[in-house]
Length: 591
Picture (cartoon, rainbow, N blue to C red):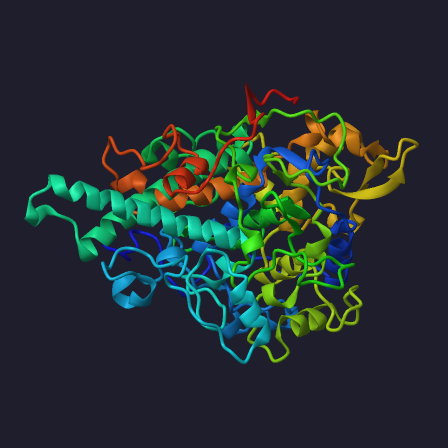
């Protein structure tokens, strides 16, 4: 395999493609701001037990595996959030990543171009392991000196300024994804070690060394990753009916079933995927997480947090020793998609700490984002070519309205950034995607009703002290022409709206089990994501679908089932199931 060839798909720095013709008219930014403000949830606390916000179908680790996938496929630092920049040639949305599942975020440009990422054998990736590859911090920075002193025993390779030396800086954004990146480094190295062990069976002229060793390992790692994306991740996030015609089909059979991401559009990722469909994962981010027996943290500082350095998982610095995940079973199950957690979920957990190993679940795919994502800290904001950065772009875009955050400078919400970027990408509404699917014969795709286009809002408490909620429709002028990102979230949430109704109060207890506890992407969001995933692999002549031998199986640990947990096992990461791990019954509508 050519280490950095591109099969039949595109290369870096190309403009994104599109599934449908671009919108001629922008949404009023005033309406987008109102919608974004309604999406932010109230401040909360980190819970150690059943949480009404949890999605029984999606363990929490897949939120960050999904983020890892995103960083492998796409990186746009050219487009603007300000509608005034629409049409500017130098602000066209373009992709700085290769639109392939090729792990360039892990490998960079390879050992020949970036040897500083690799060990002397030209194949093994470097990382901090004890004192090996440990660097001394910039001595004049007292905070940095403290950070390095508290650095975890194992961490990503870092420069003296504390920043990770990796293929994509975003994989150090928080302490969870940085440890997923490290897990991939260790998995690659374990594959290299296995291939070296196999050398003793070979003649000298057949032994793998140097570039040949690297490329053989890279092949295995990429293919295992691709297979996990398709067989483990995708069925967890997309409704099974939506995958019909794609899953368990050959490449030639699938070729007849693409409704949106047809072969002529695969020079790059489509705008609708980049700016809307694959941003579904933002709703799955929990308020916080337990990483080990001693510590639990909010994902980012919340709107009511005056000490953001004290209890947040915000990254871009040496991994703190107290942020180390002690057991990956807190994030990933040892079971296949569709197997539900086996725990008592009769009542929601309170704030009482409980350090035992419990599989934490992602929050529901719905129209709510947790409070910390409503006030994004500056280090995680996207880059901008404009003087004044992305905050000025946002302020200019929504003027004369202002951001609701009172801090200086005000922190924008992730929901607003998503809606503004979708506006500037000029992607069509959710209703137009439904029409495109119906035109291709997918009659199961039905437009959402005005009631289903709702946001869940707090509605006080009942006499037992349980939180109450109710669904409220979005603005009437957006109900027939709905921003695609929001439409996709509302589509996943629609079964809950159908069950509870609009304007009627219901208890948080009712979100712990049954219909209220499960959400997946529907026909619009799920079909876009599934067609892009399968389409990229079908068109990449070096993917496992096209290049792997017929009897090839990925190198994994455990029972060899194609799940992320077994990649972690082979990488040497600790993943021991909790005492009551998971049930053996499949998803049947109740827990």
